[in-house]
Image 1 (cartoon, rainbow over the protein chains, first blue to last red):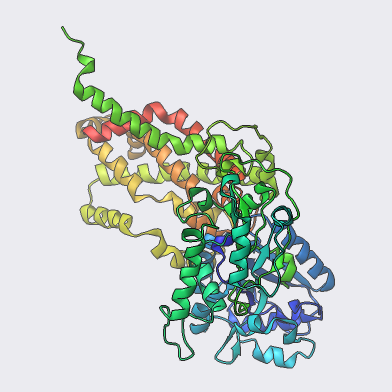
Image 2 (tube, each protein chain N blue to C red):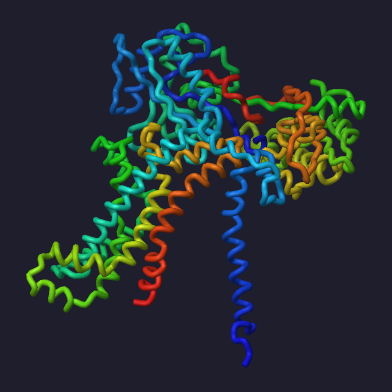
Length: 348
Length: 275
């Protein structure tokens, strides 16, 4: 669901790096195991170095929870296939309770060998020094190339010069739109060069209140706020770490978010209950069977709402596109957006 | 003579009760109907009570997320054994606190009651470490053990046992009965209603228990139903119709236990209220 997208830099903290470094499937097993021992006094301490015995890695995560456990299983299988001496024991915990469990396990010294930590929680663990510093391993492993990762995403898990995690996945803002809707109103498809102005112009043409079509949509909430202010050159903190929440750029950005609904009426009103449902934007897009969803960060343009009818017709050409409808480029890692198929950029 | 049933007061009472029924009943009805809807209709606002096309495969689709019948079995086993053991432990402790005087009994009982004030979250980590040392992590024993002790249940039963006249027990002793026999053949039959009430409470709390099972289990062999249901909730999206179907499955056993003990249950509630 778009609205909830928190920062999604997930990382594989501790261990797995050499084993999961994306494409390379070297013999990371033995290395992996020896590092674990340093971090957690794990009861099932694995054999360090050299042994050819299969090593079992416990991997706890929440991303697969919901509907992607089978996907993850397939990935694990492929990984085990490539690393015959490593067995992965996967545990999937739903997000809402994930950190409760992780904290208890960490507190009891029974933490899994590898676990997911979202960027928003990473600092908590890093400050308490509860994550293994991977830097030495990274340096000694010639086959591991940090530059296979998006740098911003990779560096996010560097704390005080210590690499305390490896990027597992990050999400990007996408814009998707319904070509049919654009065609019907003879509006040009969104382009990379678009800014707020072009988005608004297109949205105004696309909006058709009588037919229940909204021109564009992005939830009005914090997760969209910090992305929108970045588009406007603003930020929550300045370079010296001083809070700048009420800066001119930020106020302007917030006003823009509100204006789309309030002033220009190209987006559903804030109190539109239909849009406060889980996945309402996605469903509206599908349902609408026409809408285009110009997206600036989880924004859908040309949403067509048919509140009285929840059954979807065949969905039209849904285009996914990187968002660009911004004045300034979006900063990548802080721009979560859609739910990502875990396969796409995670590398576990 | 006017019909007494339709005074202003009684009408008002009925209106309030009716409103409460709707408020309490609606989520339940919504769950039932949601279990048979498709994923779009289930989130529709305002909610529609009767599905426009009935979808029965929500129940089989749960299997894609987790092995629901395996989890169901685990839950029945765990909750069943927990309930039985809890009844046993609580009645025995209550017997001692109610009918067998010893020095410092009052103080011990106070300490006992104080444990009710300590929330599970506080003892979670120590408990986990303890169980880890005892090698009980990810086992049924680990799931069941913390649940068999209940200060609340002991208290409930003790209060009821206090109402049993001492003369009765003394008479039994005179006739040569042992502690064991007094407990088993005299006390237990007398507190049946309270036992039934506690059965439901114990089963319900064990059935719905989430936090401890979440922490203590890690493999699907021992996971219980609430953990499985939580798997239906993704971080970004939740298929509510499937979740509702899961909830319906989870609801059935508890409903059966309730039906079974209902008669005693209500009686037990009134009794503990009056005496």
